[in-house]
Image (cartoon, rainbow, N blue to C red; front, side, top):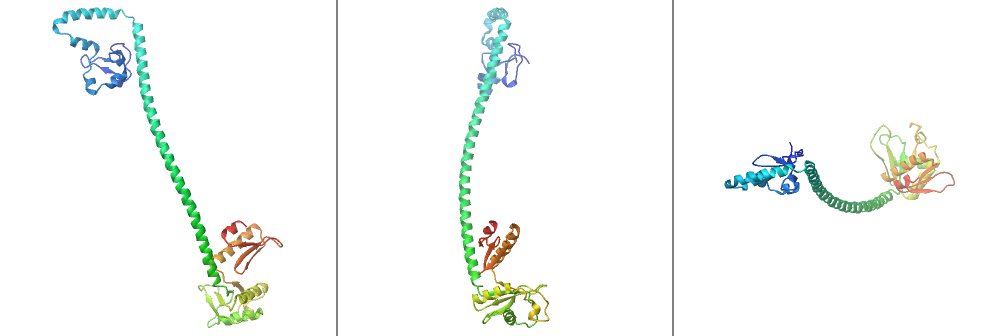
Length: 311
């Protein structure tokens, strides 16, 4: 569809003004509106009642002046025909470009508003992120502090539990028999190792019955008795069950410290780590794990799993 004024193409219905009387369509810039922006400012009712310049002029003329109006129209028509069509097109082109610039300016304003809104939202988001990071850092520090407290408490509990086992030894590899006396078995072991244990407070089997015999837990009179018995058993590797009773198998008998679950796991992991990194010596002394890479090297004490990681 072309403009009834400049005969150029009408770009968009949203940028086209239509006369309610003659139903002709125009560029807003080709009418008394002068621009698309002025057209957009019209209310809906005004747009629906809008009349073109020609129809607006006809409506304002009374019936008594029709003859004069015809003369005016004829003069206007002749005057309009004398215009340079090239100049008219140039003006319309300029007006269209101005319309486009006006539209672009409107779009730029909207874009600027959108960018401003997004910038505000981003600033708010960054502020919230900063607060969250501060909270996370505080929680991280608090968590580390709590872990340290828990580690200290675990070490204290483990120390107290191990201290309660200070006189205990474990005997492994002793076959189970009906009516056995674990106290007598411990005495036989101490006699074989030529260790004077004094009076044995108590001795009994512990653990769940399985295919292998359960260990014997013996409570000796003092830590010295425990230390002497364990040291002698480690030095004399010839002790077997058959040497205690000839009917028993020729299986090796071991005498160990009665460790807490934590220290037993610590000892197990230390031995595995030492094997991986080429450390030759891993041993227990007074329930504490020690390691050494080679003969003559510095002895290192292992008190936690972190110490094992640093081996």
